[in-house]
Image 1 (tube, rainbow, N blue to C red):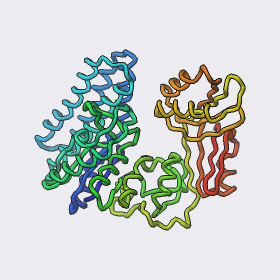
Image 2 (cartoon, rainbow, N blue to C red; image 1 turned 90 degrees about the horizontal axis):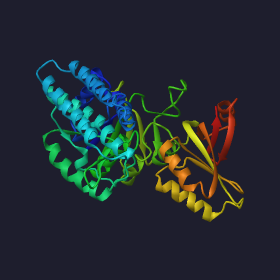
Image 3 (cartoon, helix red, strand yellow; image 1 turned 90 degrees about the vertical axis):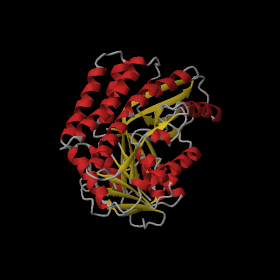
Image 4 (cartoon, one colour; image 1 turned 135 degrees about the vertical axis):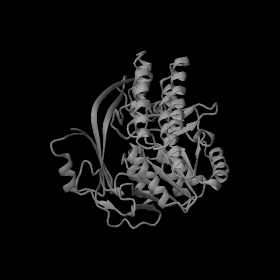
Length: 421
Protein backbone atom coordinates (compact mmCIF):
# COMPACT_ATOMS: atom_id res chain seq x y z
CA UNK A 1 0.00 0.00 0.00
CA UNK A 2 1.25 3.44 -0.95
CA UNK A 3 -0.25 6.90 -0.48
CA UNK A 4 0.30 9.67 -3.04
CA UNK A 5 -0.54 13.32 -2.55
CA UNK A 6 -0.88 15.79 -5.41
CA UNK A 7 -1.15 19.50 -4.61
CA UNK A 8 -3.01 22.25 -6.44
CA UNK A 9 -0.16 23.08 -8.82
CA UNK A 10 -0.01 19.47 -10.01
CA UNK A 11 -3.64 19.58 -11.22
CA UNK A 12 -3.89 23.26 -12.20
CA UNK A 13 -4.97 22.66 -15.83
CA UNK A 14 -5.71 19.93 -18.37
CA UNK A 15 -2.06 19.22 -19.17
CA UNK A 16 -1.31 18.92 -15.45
CA UNK A 17 -4.17 16.44 -14.95
CA UNK A 18 -2.88 14.36 -17.87
CA UNK A 19 0.58 14.43 -16.29
CA UNK A 20 -0.84 13.12 -13.00
CA UNK A 21 -2.56 10.25 -14.78
CA UNK A 22 0.72 9.45 -16.55
CA UNK A 23 2.48 9.24 -13.18
CA UNK A 24 -0.29 6.97 -11.88
CA UNK A 25 -0.05 4.73 -14.96
CA UNK A 26 3.71 4.34 -14.59
CA UNK A 27 3.35 3.54 -10.88
CA UNK A 28 0.30 1.28 -11.11
CA UNK A 29 1.70 -1.90 -9.56
CA UNK A 30 0.88 -1.05 -5.95
CA UNK A 31 -2.35 -0.67 -4.05
CA UNK A 32 -2.68 3.06 -3.82
CA UNK A 33 -4.63 5.92 -2.26
CA UNK A 34 -4.31 9.24 -4.09
CA UNK A 35 -5.06 12.42 -2.13
CA UNK A 36 -5.66 15.49 -4.28
CA UNK A 37 -5.92 19.21 -3.46
CA UNK A 38 -8.07 21.84 -5.14
CA UNK A 39 -6.97 22.87 -8.63
CA UNK A 40 -4.59 25.81 -8.93
CA UNK A 41 -5.90 28.83 -7.05
CA UNK A 42 -9.43 27.46 -6.56
CA UNK A 43 -9.16 27.67 -2.78
CA UNK A 44 -8.41 31.40 -3.00
CA UNK A 45 -11.36 31.89 -5.35
CA UNK A 46 -13.69 30.02 -3.02
CA UNK A 47 -12.41 32.12 -0.12
CA UNK A 48 -13.45 35.14 -2.18
CA UNK A 49 -16.93 33.65 -2.58
CA UNK A 50 -17.17 33.25 1.20
CA UNK A 51 -15.95 36.79 1.86
CA UNK A 52 -18.41 38.32 -0.62
CA UNK A 53 -21.27 36.29 0.84
CA UNK A 54 -20.32 37.21 4.41
CA UNK A 55 -20.27 40.89 3.43
CA UNK A 56 -23.78 40.53 1.95
CA UNK A 57 -22.38 41.24 -1.51
CA UNK A 58 -24.56 39.55 -4.15
CA UNK A 59 -21.49 39.22 -6.39
CA UNK A 60 -20.73 35.91 -4.63
CA UNK A 61 -22.95 34.11 -7.16
CA UNK A 62 -21.03 35.52 -10.10
CA UNK A 63 -17.77 34.49 -8.41
CA UNK A 64 -19.11 30.96 -7.98
CA UNK A 65 -20.22 30.85 -11.62
CA UNK A 66 -16.80 32.09 -12.70
CA UNK A 67 -15.13 29.25 -10.81
CA UNK A 68 -17.42 26.74 -12.53
CA UNK A 69 -16.57 28.20 -15.95
CA UNK A 70 -12.83 27.84 -15.27
CA UNK A 71 -13.25 24.17 -14.43
CA UNK A 72 -15.41 23.60 -17.51
CA UNK A 73 -12.59 25.08 -19.62
CA UNK A 74 -10.19 22.57 -18.08
CA UNK A 75 -12.55 19.70 -18.82
CA UNK A 76 -12.97 20.84 -22.45
CA UNK A 77 -9.24 20.41 -22.91
CA UNK A 78 -9.29 16.96 -21.27
CA UNK A 79 -12.05 15.08 -23.03
CA UNK A 80 -12.42 14.03 -26.64
CA UNK A 81 -15.50 11.85 -26.16
CA UNK A 82 -18.92 11.80 -24.54
CA UNK A 83 -17.44 11.59 -21.04
CA UNK A 84 -17.17 15.39 -21.11
CA UNK A 85 -20.90 15.92 -20.58
CA UNK A 86 -21.03 13.60 -17.59
CA UNK A 87 -17.95 15.21 -16.03
CA UNK A 88 -19.47 18.68 -16.42
CA UNK A 89 -22.69 17.48 -14.85
CA UNK A 90 -20.80 16.00 -11.89
CA UNK A 91 -19.00 19.28 -11.26
CA UNK A 92 -22.16 21.33 -11.76
CA UNK A 93 -23.87 19.32 -8.99
CA UNK A 94 -21.07 20.30 -6.62
CA UNK A 95 -21.27 23.98 -7.55
CA UNK A 96 -25.05 23.94 -7.12
CA UNK A 97 -24.74 22.27 -3.72
CA UNK A 98 -22.59 25.23 -2.61
CA UNK A 99 -25.08 27.71 -4.05
CA UNK A 100 -28.00 26.04 -2.28
CA UNK A 101 -26.10 25.98 1.00
CA UNK A 102 -25.40 29.72 0.86
CA UNK A 103 -28.95 30.58 -0.16
CA UNK A 104 -30.47 28.67 2.76
CA UNK A 105 -27.76 29.19 5.38
CA UNK A 106 -28.82 31.02 8.57
CA UNK A 107 -25.51 30.91 10.41
CA UNK A 108 -23.17 33.88 10.84
CA UNK A 109 -20.32 31.66 11.95
CA UNK A 110 -17.68 32.61 9.39
CA UNK A 111 -15.51 29.53 9.98
CA UNK A 112 -18.47 27.17 9.54
CA UNK A 113 -19.47 28.86 6.28
CA UNK A 114 -15.84 28.88 5.13
CA UNK A 115 -15.44 25.13 5.55
CA UNK A 116 -18.67 24.20 3.75
CA UNK A 117 -17.73 26.30 0.70
CA UNK A 118 -13.94 26.16 0.50
CA UNK A 119 -13.98 22.35 0.77
CA UNK A 120 -15.79 22.28 -2.59
CA UNK A 121 -12.45 22.88 -4.31
CA UNK A 122 -11.18 19.45 -3.30
CA UNK A 123 -14.41 17.76 -4.34
CA UNK A 124 -14.33 19.41 -7.77
CA UNK A 125 -10.68 18.53 -8.46
CA UNK A 126 -11.01 14.89 -7.34
CA UNK A 127 -14.18 14.50 -9.39
CA UNK A 128 -12.45 15.79 -12.52
CA UNK A 129 -9.33 13.64 -12.05
CA UNK A 130 -11.32 10.52 -11.17
CA UNK A 131 -13.71 10.90 -14.11
CA UNK A 132 -10.85 11.53 -16.53
CA UNK A 133 -8.76 8.62 -15.23
CA UNK A 134 -11.70 6.27 -15.64
CA UNK A 135 -12.35 7.59 -19.17
CA UNK A 136 -8.84 6.56 -20.26
CA UNK A 137 -9.06 3.14 -18.63
CA UNK A 138 -7.29 3.94 -15.39
CA UNK A 139 -9.70 2.26 -13.00
CA UNK A 140 -10.30 4.04 -9.73
CA UNK A 141 -12.95 4.75 -7.12
CA UNK A 142 -13.74 8.23 -5.83
CA UNK A 143 -14.03 8.17 -2.03
CA UNK A 144 -15.78 10.98 -0.13
CA UNK A 145 -13.26 11.70 2.62
CA UNK A 146 -16.05 12.79 4.97
CA UNK A 147 -17.06 9.12 5.19
CA UNK A 148 -13.76 8.17 6.84
CA UNK A 149 -11.93 11.20 8.29
CA UNK A 150 -13.64 12.48 11.43
CA UNK A 151 -12.91 15.64 13.41
CA UNK A 152 -14.35 17.76 16.19
CA UNK A 153 -16.38 20.92 15.51
CA UNK A 154 -13.39 23.31 15.32
CA UNK A 155 -14.08 24.71 11.86
CA UNK A 156 -10.97 25.70 9.84
CA UNK A 157 -8.75 23.83 12.34
CA UNK A 158 -10.47 20.47 12.75
CA UNK A 159 -8.90 18.13 15.30
CA UNK A 160 -8.85 14.56 13.99
CA UNK A 161 -10.48 11.75 15.97
CA UNK A 162 -7.73 9.27 15.18
CA UNK A 163 -9.12 5.96 16.46
CA UNK A 164 -12.46 6.30 14.71
CA UNK A 165 -10.76 7.61 11.57
CA UNK A 166 -8.13 4.84 11.48
CA UNK A 167 -10.77 2.13 11.73
CA UNK A 168 -12.97 3.69 9.05
CA UNK A 169 -10.11 4.21 6.57
CA UNK A 170 -8.72 0.70 7.03
CA UNK A 171 -12.12 -0.90 6.50
CA UNK A 172 -13.30 1.25 3.58
CA UNK A 173 -10.08 1.33 1.59
CA UNK A 174 -9.54 -2.41 1.94
CA UNK A 175 -12.81 -2.90 0.06
CA UNK A 176 -12.25 -0.25 -2.60
CA UNK A 177 -8.67 -1.06 -3.68
CA UNK A 178 -9.81 -4.49 -4.88
CA UNK A 179 -11.13 -2.83 -8.06
CA UNK A 180 -8.49 -0.12 -8.60
CA UNK A 181 -6.79 2.70 -6.81
CA UNK A 182 -8.69 5.16 -4.61
CA UNK A 183 -8.91 8.92 -5.14
CA UNK A 184 -9.98 11.14 -2.26
CA UNK A 185 -9.94 14.74 -1.08
CA UNK A 186 -7.25 16.35 1.00
CA UNK A 187 -7.75 19.10 3.59
CA UNK A 188 -11.31 18.03 4.50
CA UNK A 189 -12.91 16.16 7.39
CA UNK A 190 -16.34 15.65 8.89
CA UNK A 191 -17.89 16.80 12.17
CA UNK A 192 -20.03 14.40 14.24
CA UNK A 193 -23.05 16.02 12.55
CA UNK A 194 -21.64 15.39 9.06
CA UNK A 195 -20.67 18.97 8.22
CA UNK A 196 -17.37 19.66 6.46
CA UNK A 197 -14.37 20.81 8.44
CA UNK A 198 -10.96 21.74 7.09
CA UNK A 199 -7.60 20.86 8.61
CA UNK A 200 -5.84 24.20 8.03
CA UNK A 201 -4.46 25.64 4.79
CA UNK A 202 -2.25 23.19 2.90
CA UNK A 203 -3.74 20.42 5.04
CA UNK A 204 -3.81 17.85 2.23
CA UNK A 205 -0.34 16.63 3.24
CA UNK A 206 -1.75 15.90 6.69
CA UNK A 207 -4.67 14.04 5.14
CA UNK A 208 -2.27 11.84 3.20
CA UNK A 209 -0.25 11.05 6.32
CA UNK A 210 -3.45 10.09 8.17
CA UNK A 211 -4.28 7.65 5.37
CA UNK A 212 -0.70 6.30 5.39
CA UNK A 213 -0.87 5.80 9.14
CA UNK A 214 -4.28 4.14 9.03
CA UNK A 215 -3.28 1.78 6.22
CA UNK A 216 0.21 0.93 7.52
CA UNK A 217 1.50 2.14 4.17
CA UNK A 218 4.90 1.14 2.84
CA UNK A 219 5.60 4.72 1.74
CA UNK A 220 3.97 8.11 1.34
CA UNK A 221 4.89 10.37 -1.59
CA UNK A 222 4.16 14.08 -1.92
CA UNK A 223 4.41 15.30 -5.53
CA UNK A 224 5.44 18.95 -5.87
CA UNK A 225 6.79 21.43 -8.42
CA UNK A 226 10.29 21.22 -6.90
CA UNK A 227 12.77 18.35 -7.11
CA UNK A 228 12.48 17.66 -3.39
CA UNK A 229 13.19 19.35 -0.08
CA UNK A 230 15.43 22.39 -0.32
CA UNK A 231 17.25 24.26 2.42
CA UNK A 232 15.18 27.36 1.61
CA UNK A 233 12.52 28.59 -0.82
CA UNK A 234 14.05 28.31 -4.33
CA UNK A 235 11.64 30.96 -5.62
CA UNK A 236 13.27 33.46 -3.28
CA UNK A 237 16.80 32.06 -3.19
CA UNK A 238 17.96 30.75 -6.60
CA UNK A 239 20.99 29.10 -4.97
CA UNK A 240 18.81 26.91 -2.69
CA UNK A 241 20.37 23.51 -2.06
CA UNK A 242 18.70 20.12 -2.54
CA UNK A 243 18.50 17.89 0.56
CA UNK A 244 18.47 14.23 -0.45
CA UNK A 245 17.46 13.04 3.01
CA UNK A 246 16.48 14.41 6.40
CA UNK A 247 15.24 12.88 9.63
CA UNK A 248 11.70 13.08 10.97
CA UNK A 249 13.06 15.36 13.70
CA UNK A 250 14.59 17.78 11.21
CA UNK A 251 11.41 17.78 9.14
CA UNK A 252 9.28 18.52 12.20
CA UNK A 253 11.56 21.40 13.16
CA UNK A 254 11.44 22.83 9.62
CA UNK A 255 7.67 22.63 9.32
CA UNK A 256 7.14 23.92 12.87
CA UNK A 257 9.06 27.06 12.00
CA UNK A 258 7.12 27.57 8.79
CA UNK A 259 8.86 25.70 5.94
CA UNK A 260 6.18 25.28 3.28
CA UNK A 261 7.43 22.00 1.85
CA UNK A 262 4.87 20.00 3.86
CA UNK A 263 2.09 20.72 6.37
CA UNK A 264 3.36 20.93 9.99
CA UNK A 265 1.13 18.10 11.23
CA UNK A 266 2.21 15.69 8.50
CA UNK A 267 5.20 14.08 10.20
CA UNK A 268 3.74 12.75 13.46
CA UNK A 269 1.42 10.07 12.02
CA UNK A 270 4.04 8.62 9.67
CA UNK A 271 6.82 8.84 12.26
CA UNK A 272 4.67 6.91 14.71
CA UNK A 273 4.71 3.95 12.30
CA UNK A 274 8.13 4.60 10.73
CA UNK A 275 6.69 5.23 7.25
CA UNK A 276 9.17 6.96 4.90
CA UNK A 277 7.93 10.14 3.20
CA UNK A 278 9.35 11.05 -0.19
CA UNK A 279 9.00 14.51 -1.74
CA UNK A 280 9.25 14.23 -5.55
CA UNK A 281 8.84 16.43 -8.59
CA UNK A 282 5.77 15.91 -10.75
CA UNK A 283 7.71 17.69 -13.52
CA UNK A 284 10.72 15.34 -13.51
CA UNK A 285 8.72 12.43 -12.17
CA UNK A 286 11.27 9.75 -13.05
CA UNK A 287 13.85 11.35 -10.74
CA UNK A 288 14.04 10.31 -7.09
CA UNK A 289 13.32 13.03 -4.55
CA UNK A 290 14.09 13.76 -0.92
CA UNK A 291 13.31 11.11 1.69
CA UNK A 292 12.24 11.81 5.28
CA UNK A 293 12.96 8.83 7.53
CA UNK A 294 14.23 7.86 10.96
CA UNK A 295 17.86 7.15 10.07
CA UNK A 296 18.74 9.81 7.50
CA UNK A 297 22.26 11.24 7.57
CA UNK A 298 21.96 14.93 8.44
CA UNK A 299 25.52 15.59 9.59
CA UNK A 300 26.29 17.81 6.58
CA UNK A 301 23.16 19.94 6.45
CA UNK A 302 23.64 23.51 5.21
CA UNK A 303 21.89 26.42 6.97
CA UNK A 304 18.13 25.99 6.60
CA UNK A 305 16.42 29.35 6.04
CA UNK A 306 12.71 29.88 6.66
CA UNK A 307 10.87 33.17 6.18
CA UNK A 308 7.39 33.40 7.70
CA UNK A 309 5.81 36.64 6.58
CA UNK A 310 2.55 38.30 7.60
CA UNK A 311 3.38 38.25 11.32
CA UNK A 312 1.81 40.29 14.12
CA UNK A 313 3.60 41.10 17.38
CA UNK A 314 1.24 41.35 20.37
CA UNK A 315 2.69 42.69 23.62
CA UNK A 316 0.78 42.30 26.90
CA UNK A 317 1.45 44.39 30.03
CA UNK A 318 -0.47 44.19 33.31
CA UNK A 319 -2.50 47.35 33.81
CA UNK A 320 -1.43 47.61 37.46
CA UNK A 321 2.25 47.65 36.35
CA UNK A 322 2.92 44.36 38.16
CA UNK A 323 5.38 41.74 37.02
CA UNK A 324 4.19 39.33 34.34
CA UNK A 325 3.96 36.13 36.37
CA UNK A 326 2.53 32.65 35.96
CA UNK A 327 -1.07 33.66 36.67
CA UNK A 328 -0.92 36.29 33.90
CA UNK A 329 0.71 33.86 31.48
CA UNK A 330 -1.84 31.14 32.15
CA UNK A 331 -4.67 33.50 31.18
CA UNK A 332 -2.89 34.57 28.01
CA UNK A 333 -2.10 30.98 26.98
CA UNK A 334 -5.63 29.80 27.77
CA UNK A 335 -7.09 32.54 25.56
CA UNK A 336 -4.81 31.67 22.66
CA UNK A 337 -5.68 27.99 23.05
CA UNK A 338 -9.40 28.76 23.14
CA UNK A 339 -9.10 30.73 19.89
CA UNK A 340 -6.88 28.09 18.25
CA UNK A 341 -4.23 30.67 17.37
CA UNK A 342 -0.75 29.18 17.33
CA UNK A 343 2.15 31.11 18.88
CA UNK A 344 5.18 31.30 16.57
CA UNK A 345 7.54 33.08 18.97
CA UNK A 346 7.27 34.46 22.51
CA UNK A 347 9.44 36.43 24.90
CA UNK A 348 8.98 37.42 28.53
CA UNK A 349 10.23 40.61 30.18
CA UNK A 350 9.64 42.01 33.66
CA UNK A 351 6.35 43.73 32.95
CA UNK A 352 5.49 42.56 29.45
CA UNK A 353 4.98 39.40 27.45
CA UNK A 354 5.36 39.47 23.66
CA UNK A 355 3.96 36.97 21.17
CA UNK A 356 4.36 36.67 17.39
CA UNK A 357 1.47 35.07 15.49
CA UNK A 358 0.19 34.75 11.94
CA UNK A 359 -2.12 37.57 10.89
CA UNK A 360 -5.54 36.03 11.47
CA UNK A 361 -7.60 39.11 12.11
CA UNK A 362 -10.76 37.59 13.55
CA UNK A 363 -8.86 35.43 16.02
CA UNK A 364 -6.53 38.26 17.05
CA UNK A 365 -9.46 40.63 17.55
CA UNK A 366 -11.21 38.02 19.74
CA UNK A 367 -8.10 37.59 21.89
CA UNK A 368 -7.64 41.33 22.32
CA UNK A 369 -11.32 41.70 23.25
CA UNK A 370 -11.08 38.91 25.85
CA UNK A 371 -7.91 40.24 27.49
CA UNK A 372 -8.13 44.03 27.17
CA UNK A 373 -9.71 44.53 30.62
CA UNK A 374 -6.70 43.02 32.36
CA UNK A 375 -3.84 43.92 30.02
CA UNK A 376 -2.59 46.87 28.04
CA UNK A 377 -2.05 45.43 24.58
CA UNK A 378 0.03 46.82 21.74
CA UNK A 379 0.23 45.40 18.27
CA UNK A 380 2.79 45.65 15.46
CA UNK A 381 1.77 44.31 12.05
CA UNK A 382 3.45 43.55 8.72
CA UNK A 383 6.43 41.79 10.29
CA UNK A 384 8.43 38.75 9.18
CA UNK A 385 9.82 35.89 11.23
CA UNK A 386 13.20 34.62 10.07
CA UNK A 387 14.34 31.22 11.32
CA UNK A 388 17.78 29.82 10.54
CA UNK A 389 18.67 26.28 11.59
CA UNK A 390 22.35 25.29 11.61
CA UNK A 391 23.18 28.99 11.39
CA UNK A 392 26.51 30.80 11.13
CA UNK A 393 27.26 34.47 11.69
CA UNK A 394 27.78 35.15 8.00
CA UNK A 395 24.29 34.02 7.02
CA UNK A 396 22.74 35.95 9.94
CA UNK A 397 24.48 39.17 8.88
CA UNK A 398 23.52 38.68 5.24
CA UNK A 399 19.83 38.10 5.91
CA UNK A 400 19.35 40.83 8.53
CA UNK A 401 21.18 43.60 6.69
CA UNK A 402 19.11 46.84 6.68
CA UNK A 403 16.33 45.18 8.71
CA UNK A 404 14.95 46.32 12.06
CA UNK A 405 15.11 43.37 14.50
CA UNK A 406 12.34 43.54 17.11
CA UNK A 407 12.90 40.18 18.85
CA UNK A 408 15.78 37.73 18.80
CA UNK A 409 16.06 34.21 20.23
CA UNK A 410 19.00 31.85 19.86
CA UNK A 411 19.83 28.25 20.77
CA UNK A 412 22.62 25.88 19.81
CA UNK A 413 21.00 24.95 16.51
CA UNK A 414 18.41 27.62 15.75
CA UNK A 415 18.12 31.40 15.69
CA UNK A 416 14.84 33.29 15.27
CA UNK A 417 14.51 36.96 14.47
CA UNK A 418 11.30 38.94 14.20
CA UNK A 419 12.03 41.76 11.76
CA UNK A 420 10.49 44.72 10.02
CA UNK A 421 11.68 44.62 6.43
